[in-house]
Length: 282
Ligand SMILES: Nc1ncnc2c1ncn2[C@@H]1O[C@H](COP(=O)(O)OP(=O)(O)OP(=O)(O)O)[C@@H](O)[C@H]1O
Ligand SMILES: [Mg+2]
Image (cartoon, rainbow, N blue to C red):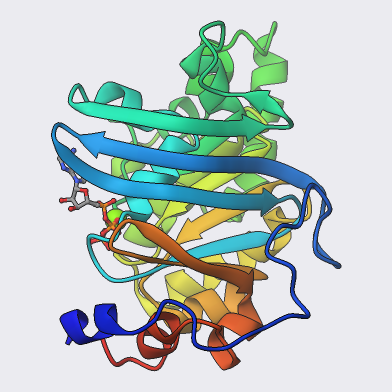
């Protein structure tokens, strides 16, 4: 099936109205340009996993990354906060900017970068510590709170923003790992937003959750995007359609197409995108 898809011409629908190169201007209704990846190529050892990826991510909006398993979505997401640095065999080339600054520049401290570009993973992974300490961990690491009262405030605010406060305020000393899956994932979101990141990367954050917990997280994303920029990897087309304003379709390590979500789902320019969003492969 995929081999056939590959044989087709890359672009079958001409769309002269939509210029490919948008410069730094945000498409209407999106916030400012927040991150820009240019010609990103990535290798795991000898094996190339990303090919010339160019993608812009805008603030006050959610960008969904979709595509079949193994196409490089997680790999690309990890490039955006240098999580791939910790993989020895991984080599990244290209240019990735946050507010115009090269995040791979030698003077950039990846730990500081990850405070600005936070991440939430597929499987909720609270630290084996109390609920309070999970959220307090990063503000303490970055020396953000001088007093206990300030830390209490940060913990409370983060848990409120993550929609978890009411459920845990009476048991902040209980272990984070004792919460339900959906609560754990919201705890991980609280942990990620405790240092006020500008970008939140979410790699299939709901795939281990039931529909109710998923709906809670989706509502949360909608609220959070008012103050930060979100990029989410998802295998669920419905989720991408519900939560995102822009969608990027990856296939075999290449970014095939990016556009507003409604265009990607109703009138994509590439046949491979069309086949994927209509469920013909993947
Ligand atoms: N740590 C690693 N070492 C070696 N190869 C890797 C590593 N991580 C990913 N890869 C390879 O890179 C390619 C892209 O993988 P990636 O995990 O980014 O895909 P994905 O689109 O997120 O897939 P999925 O939807 O299954 O999560 C795959 O061929 C994968 O096997
Ligand atoms: Mg993945």
